[in-house]
Amino acid sequence: MTEISDKIIKDIKEKNIHPKPRWFFAVRNLAFWLLFIAAIFVGALSFAVILDVLTNHDWDIYLRMHKTFGQYILLSLPYLWIVCLIFFAWIAYYDFVHIKGWYRHSVYLIVSISILGSLFLGGLLFYSGVGKKIDHALDARVPFYGMMNINKRKIWCQPKEGLLGGEIMPPPLETPERIIIRDCHGREWSIERPNMKPFLMRVGDRIKIIGHEMDEMHFEAEEFRRW
Image (cartoon, rainbow, N blue to C red; front, side, top):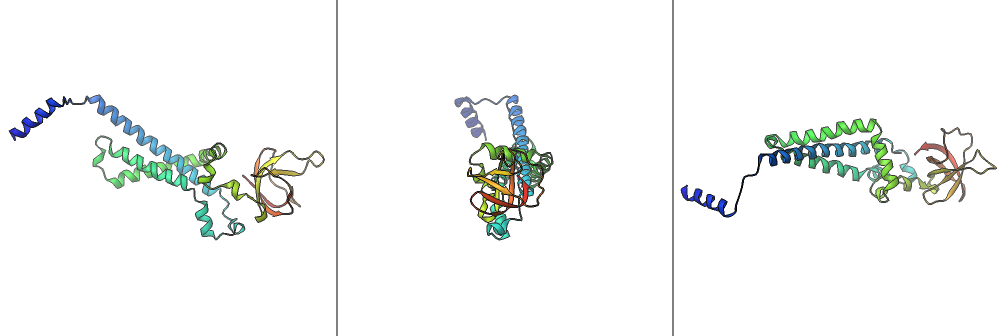
């Protein structure tokens, strides 16, 4: 035992090892707490967007896209946000087990706390409209965002399948009551709407229309939906 003690003391002296001050551990512990809270919050944002995307998705148009309902579900799932939710739940767990004293607790308890915390906060953010704002902001400003999530522009840019969406443009002066839509390809469509009273629509709004293509410039509407 004496030889081992002497060897340890010798190594400490040779490597100039000093004990770390107490404040170092306090700061590290605080950093793990902050990362744990941040991970839960980002996970909650991810869950809020998942709820918004799924609840506001057009689940009834799969037949027009020549898909089965199962295929349409697989096409529609927001995989990017699901991965984000799982990833930040893992980050929260990793940070939690490195907080002083908490490593003794059950892994299942820690994972449950982080996931339930994200889901509860995410539900509140969804009902407050935060999920919708995040999804719309990323869709408008991040070019590759639509490639990793439900590409609403692509779905609603199939006039031959009866699906048309886009931005409302100023109508011609001679027919101010007509609706003109510019689609995702920049093409402008004149919308026919026999005996229809759609919701209030203004120039610059984005809308979705179900109907059928009449020719390369005219589309007859059967139903209008908010974007």
